[in-house]
Length: 353
Image 1: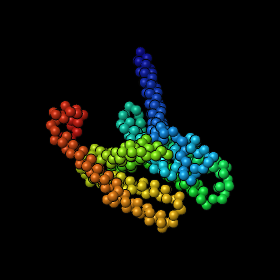
Image 2 (image 1 turned 30 degrees about the horizontal axis):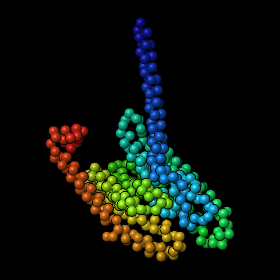
Image 3 (image 1 turned 90 degrees about the horizontal axis):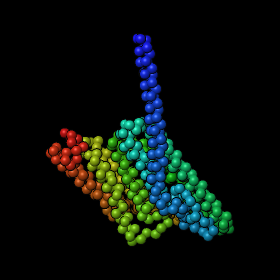
């Protein structure tokens, strides 16, 4: 009788262990599926402004010759000197969405997301974005060959002028590759970095969000109108508002928090000027300027953006206002009696006491 009971207990333990192992395997499989799906959705979300506007290859001015048919080609990324900022923002926003989503979902223990899954989602996002860049590069180079075949005499007699499209293509592809690397870095920082580093990474993502939203307002190749200009005036306040809210939620009550807040503000301020400088350089290269002339032009653009007439001080002021306002709200919440706070927000009870 005793042996039978021991055997029954042993079988029950084995069955329970097998069930637990099967459940663990299913959880791991579900976590991998969630991770891969999150990466795919994040990449698509980053490309949304380009997807809804047709995904047609924008023809740089120097390519615009009869017979090329450039504008009819479908590409996954906008490869154009005037949409370089949009190209980078599509990739950076995709990485940022993946990183923030992973950080939030990882807090839900039942999903079983581990640090190892971070490398999976980073690989999925980087792989899909790299494939999109390769498809765009192949299509752009094919379009250039179509132009050369359409009018070989024009290209042969003006070879020095028409090498500019190839230079633009190489520069934009290099910028796209760099943006993919930065998107992967943003993903990792936003998903797993300490709050201070994540805040700085969020400032970079917020800078990209402004350009990303502008892609909906003025599609690539479209002309700006009075209504679109009015909307863009509002859109330019979005990045500082995002950073201001993030700083206020994190607080500035310690040296580390205060330092990360200052660094994130500087990233936003200097990044805005940097984007303007890069766009100015790409627009100026078509005129074959000298190195000295190009550096002088870039210096003037930076001074204009960072100076009193630029958007930098305006962005800085708005960030400060947002930080002061939301920090004041946190102080008011701390001084609110627990009974009143429980009525307004039951989850807030005990957060500060």
